[in-house]
Length: 633
Image (tube, rainbow, N blue to C red; front, side, top):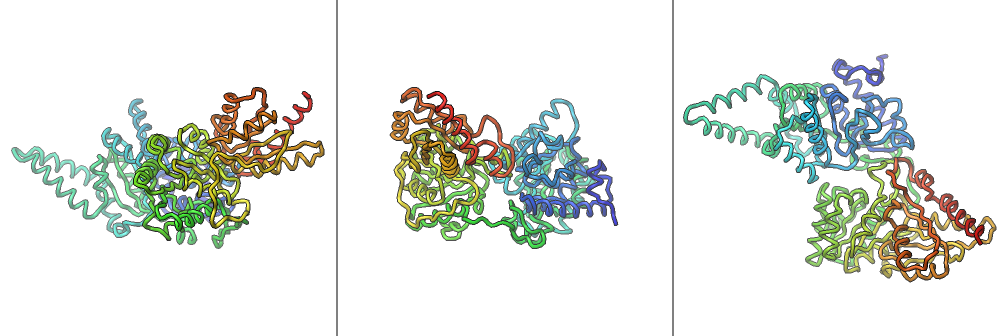
């Protein structure tokens, strides 16, 4: 039986020292390890399986940490982690206290730049390269970016700058959409191995020099030769755009042929000291048949049966994402001006049914959140009712457009913010715990959060009848199992819902904290102290329910606010600001939420317990307040 190649690499054997046969066995072992681990932990399966050979080739030619590799987004970094000393800890992937599902500087010196959002790799790599040059160092810098991330505006901003600087930088375009399959094969691979070799490169440069030195016609002959070269290149390869931006284009090359990948990267390393873009065509989910057949489903997946690919746990209730998608379909039937917009997250935001039913009213703008928001603003100027469906953490990328292009003009754009609050295993880059803070500071914008899936449908309907900008923020995961109304009625904006009256203490809870607050109240009252605990569904974070706050303040009822958001500038801060301005003075207010720190990865349940946002945590905080009040009376 052959020794484990992955174990050899983990023990310090360089990838480049393995024979081609050993490298092929290494690729198979990596795939087996990724599938077995993600089947148990969940994670980004298809992207990581698609870049196994690419990762091995990069480590063979550009070994880290000597060279620097930046993985765009980073959800494809599992093979990178396995090749850089994390085999023993890989079983802890995305688990509390375990390794992250994304590159993370604090985790390893091989993770030169932390990622999690798309389109950042070329910018970061350009900075790394500029620092290298300023310090007089000689290592290589590589940015690996997917074809989806190439739709990000930041990626093109960086390409433009790198081409202007003429940096010694390698950009690897990981193309897994197979849209140029006709250019992939033995001939294409052969041409690129030859064209990146040192002899043809030198011959080309020598020929250009010769033409330029021809008396009287040198420059003209060079221009003609260049035009001929570009015309031929445009016919056989899709790289003319990158050449115009100042990059030498190499590709497309097959992304699962290790020998060809390594040879191409070696030629690139040896021959080019200026920007190079290597176009690699890969297959998402490579090596696991269910993921190859349905890469979208297995892009980010929960635990599954590795033998069949079947998901192991099905939620009892539909997810908030699915409820939103169906509610939007019903709204579209009533409102012909309604249009839906997403930034490359059709499935992730629940818009696939809408896209199928109303293709002429659906817009996927690619990974371009800034454009999505301003595009929606333009639509609304002509009387359309745009709904921008986006993850909370990704709306951070379009803050200026939200403020300047939508809210300053008071345009009726609806923001459907999925994954608001604690999202779980994806960690710090994906928790939507800042939106209440950065949104409630914007004039004209209504900010709301439903307590359950029925209220999500009601708030969506309310948003579509509101004459200005409106954000509806809802959590990741399954709803609580209530029926969703087919024809929801609009809710009065700025009016909260009293779920339980109580004179001794009132919990003002937002969104996903409402049901834990109700359970906390039941726990406290069951203790037999005679405490009367009120619970308020503070479904509008902005505007606040000033009338209800005034009533509670007049009764001198202690208030505990609860939110899955950072405390700085969040809902609790809004309550304190209001009471400070409108009194009366002396009402005790305690806040439950996220402290001034980035939240690590872990299950939603574990994280809610850690921050005291589950029923037990809220009950403990309320109990202390009640005991303090009883002791001081």
